[in-house]
Length: 234
Image 1: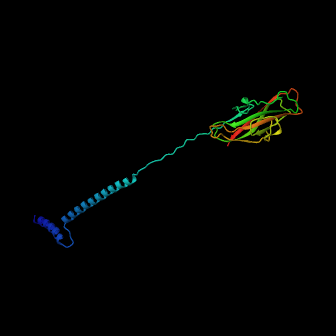
Image 2: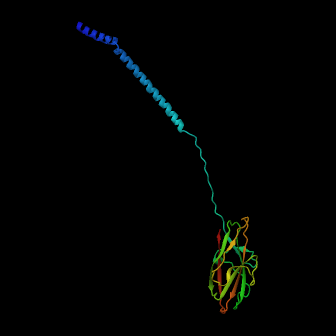
Image 3: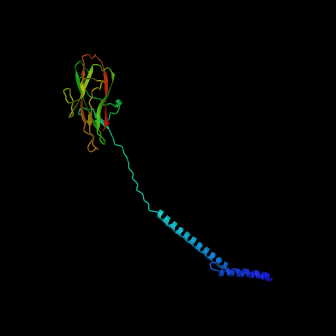
């Protein structure tokens, strides 16, 4: 028992003596210091986490921003383009003759239905851009087709400043004289202006067709010719 107590006392005193030596910390002091360090570390970690949380909130607040939009749109509408012609003697009654089947009938002077060699007959024609057309145009005689017999017939077309057409009419040559009635070679283009304002029809181009019977004209021959004028928008 004394040995046990001595041992116990030695341990006690040993611990106590260690505490009295310079630079030696008692066990209880070590435990206390360790706990204090742990609590301090926990507080630092908590402070860091708290700081991180605050920092995270601050970052999210920076990412959020105002935004707004602007939109632009447009509507596109095609223009209008329409050609019309007049075949009456005054060249003033305009209408549409858009297909060969609906071609306007030219009225030639006598003796268009009783021709003999060297006879000359004439017929007025006028073309213009219709009201509400939104572009100027270039007009060209692009084709001529025939039925029956039209050999030994030639023609010319002149453009005049005013209405009126006779065999004596002169003007700007559109188709040169002595051209076969089924040919459009050498035809010159005509400029057409849209109306101003566009709700009006454009100014007409007055034309005069003149047909001449050749020396080789056959008796009783008969035939018809259809000419096509084509306008291209500019």
